[in-house]
Amino acid sequence: MSRSSAPWSGMLRRRSRREWLSAGLVLGGVVGFVVLVYLVVVVLGGLLLGHTSSPHLGLSVLATAIVAVAFDAVLTRLEDVAARVVHRGRPSPYDAMRRFAGAVDVAGPAEELPLWMARLLAEATGAQWVRVWVAIDGQRVTAATWPPGARRTAALGWDLGTRRLPVRHGDEELGMLVLREREGTSLTPVEERLFEDLAAQAGLVLRGVRLRAVLERRLAELSSREDELRRSRERLVDAQDEARRRLERDIHDGAQQHLVALAVNLRLAATLAGTAPDRAAALLAAQEGAAADALATLHQLASGIYPMGLEEAGVATALREALRDGVTVVDRGSVRYPIDVEAAAYFCALEAVQNATKHAAASTIRVEVDAGPEELILVVTDDGVGFETALVADGTGLANMRDRIDSAGGALEVASEPGRGTRLRVEIPAPVPASASVAAERG
Image (cartoon, rainbow, N blue to C red; front, side):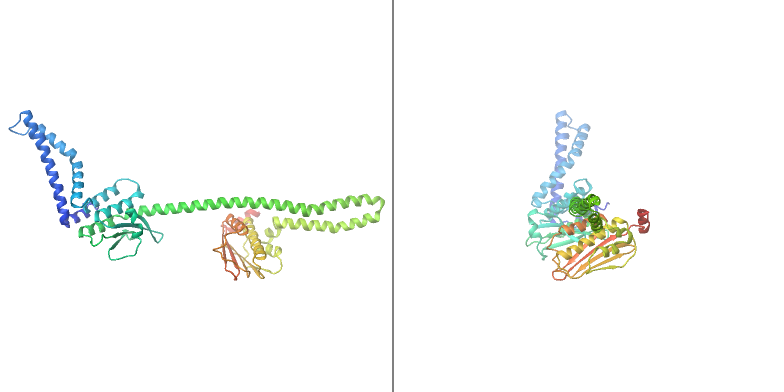
């Protein structure tokens, strides 16, 4: 006997009076159907053909064929009639288990099986409601409730009329069946047996439901991540455009003005060289300072675009050169990284210090750079006013920092409390092998 048929034999041994009555009605209907076919086809047909002494062989074969072809349809119809008469329209527990086994064996929409199972159990037992739970990531999630309008009632606390059975597959608990008995009536032994057997056979169904739910959740996470990456790329493009516009303004208002003034003064000195040599010499001497100012302005612009000290000496040294007094830079590692990784950490630190200076009113700022063999860790702390991280959305500065670190494959965390300052931590995994990748890039 197969596993799916084993519960049926147990039910047959424990049938209630209603079950025996239902089975008797079905059996009587089947016998009546066979007798009726025999009388109509064999007896009546024999009379019409003049065979009254013995049954006609051909008519007997015809009657047998009619019974064989129509047997399943007649049996199903008789079971429905018996259910309406004996079980007040509800399927018997025996029929419920048979239908459940058939539904699992026949391919169909997997997402509909929990609801179908809840409905079948509720109708077969006459329960007020039935709920199917599935365990997903350590939490119980409702997969189906029948009837659908009983969701609020089904969410109430446990009481004496509520039954629950875990659904397992092997040693793993996949979910739970919860049943609320009808008012003033407990489940019969056969209905309890149905409840137990249904929970015992629902493991594969809930496993499929859980896999589907996990896949949907992962799909939602991937979709959310895709949206965030798209927004991040848009912010990076906007930031690059703004940086180019700022660089253009700085060149126009700074270096270009110095160079234009230097060119004008040099032309003037050339003009005065023939008529007023002393004035020309004094003017040329003054241009040494103007040239130095122009060089300083160009150096400052170049440092803002890309610091030369970063590639030569690393993140910590470049930060010491760029940051003002009052900012402490601590270097705890000597491993070098690809230049795009170090640039991301460098500019992220500059942005964090700028935010602490402008918005946090910080008096003390500390930057720690730990360039270890496994990851580059950057920590920026300040003693400023702080803020409530749950209530403050990422501003432009923090969004730019996240975009930079994301582009390097790292992660950024911000911890802050009002009145207790802010702590920013960046972790960027090291390339493997780190030394080889850096050497190849700087080769």
